Length: 439
Ligand SMILES: [Zn+2]
Image (cartoon, rainbow, N blue to C red):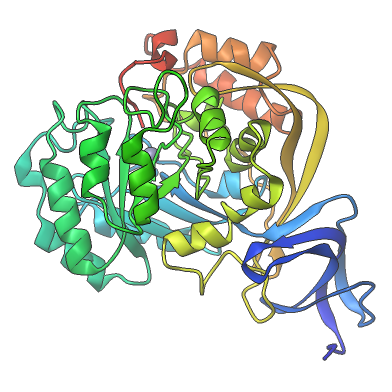
């Protein structure tokens, strides 16, 4: 049934909605906060506003399952508003910035980020990610029973448990935190997201403990817990975990994405289930930048476009058990919509280790719509006083074309603010293969 009047029409775009198996040139009509109709255009009902999406992709508002949003309360946290409007990310998931000691602060922050949808994984360590690392160094910070209670008490906000497993976070590679996290996730019946990077622990020991539906983030890491061996072959323990239903998420961040590993995974038929940005105080300055840039990097290593869209919509929403809340354009659902443009040209993108890849396609966002209304532009926040960008990072991003052209003014402004930081700048080893895991 065609409605008599529409508040917003998005016309002429290629609509890709993996949840409803839609991939066609269609018009979308919105009434109030909800999607009213998706049909071959032109829609005949008069509309109060129209977005001409000719030449664009129209996809569900992006779901980013690994970000850090406890701004002003943790080392990594940023505010999502200055990023959401220019990237189309309408549903944000904080990955363990808060543990039980600072959960209340996260809940207050998350409520303040409306109209964006914000969820969180609760860190198994009570101190969360207040500091850069080391949260699992002290066993008394992990109380599985209290964590499970906190998850159960906050079903609208908390979607799972987070545990970082690298030698710095665990102070040497202990699996004590993993076992506590599994106990909490089991009791609360939610997924566990584990971060991998520079071990110990060993990847095989971590994967062996995970259950179907648990999520391995930084699955494209180039550090020594990589999913592939030196010749690019997927490890047996990875295939076994994949067959068991363990999910693999990109989590680009400042240490989680290697072009070589991502390409090997795609070639070996183990494409990531979910693509996330791991956006935080460091990665937002580049070369991570944001989710559409991470998506472009997966396209560059051969992941097909519909698969890339599924990895930031239907599959991302399902991974956090919120497929009834986000990640689709089905009529009746909240009108969270991203209008993306594929910019075709020669562009150099860089992975977390500042290795370069020339790509032909860059996804950028033309409009981010939340509950039927386009998000207004917001200027970027200044980096936190403790943020140090390296001279190499700044030079590559500024001088060698790694900054997506559409966003260059914002990135430059951020970097110039970064220059004010009254601390010695970190050097290139931050990004070197085998360097200590950041996040
Ligand atoms: Zn992270």
